[in-house]
Amino acid sequence: MSALPGRVWFVGAGPGDPELITVKGRGLIERAGAILFAGSLVNEAATRWAPPGCVVADSKDMTHEQMVAWLTDQAARCGTVVRLQTGDPALYGTLIELVQPLDAAGIPIAVVPGVSSAMASAAAAVESFTLPEVTQTVIFTRVEGRTPMPPGESLAELAAHRCTLCIFLSITLLHRIEAGLRDAGWPDDAPMLVVHKASWPGEERIVRGTLATIKQQCREAGIVSQAMVIASPALGARGWAELTKSKLYDAAFTHRFRRGTPPP
Ligand code: SAH
Image (cartoon, rainbow, N blue to C red; front, side, top):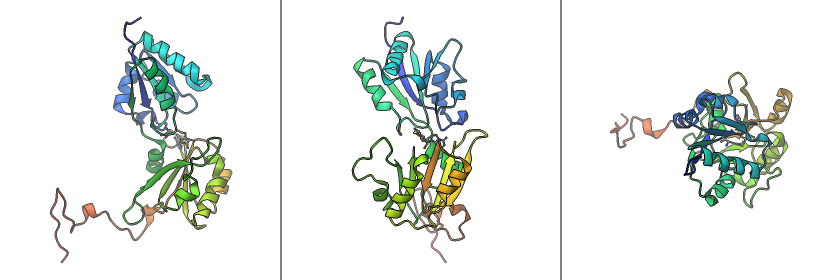
């Protein structure tokens, strides 16, 4: 047993493709003495770089108390303990719940960000969440399931902004998404995108539809889990004939790195 406790690193494993973990995250796995991964969501391949002798455990059948006990115990044994979380640890994970008891036990922790499934979904579908003069705002949210939404955060209230909405954890609640968007006045033909298992090699599926059609399309495609629902006025812009281009690259626009040339 080492005298000082090891550090517990909360590492974003990325959205599924093992190559989408950061270089730093991979380096930590390579020198980890113990890894606790969220088996239901993190591709096991993310543990493929674990060194021989590394203790690897799946947290899917553990309670919160068991996870804390496991991390505390491993931190007493090895210098580097990795808690692998899906996507980025700052979104819809158990980061703070796990950090608090480790803080109380005097175990040092650190967080390594990861590629969120929201970003992987945009990449899969070749979409931009922001477009000049269309929307400059992205909201990461979910609809109410067993976890209640705080006041002011109903989908109808958020959708009133007409910005990009990345809706996590809600693929089985498409009827609520539809109701929220309709309450906010989104039309039947508002474009919608669902990406299932974004970035998972060979398993990714993309469904494009509208507010009126997306629920039925997802039902027909059998998509009931691990999916990102995106509603945005910027969807499909790759095919638009008229696009307001970014000012940064406009020939007439002067900025720190380039003097603009006035139009003739
Ligand atoms: N921290 C994670 C989110 C965890 S919550 C992140 O940053 O991505 C789990 C939800 O994330 C799922 O219900 C689903 O909405 C979404 N999700 C996770 N992985 C996904 C993937 N590969 N493709 C699409 N959605 C995914």
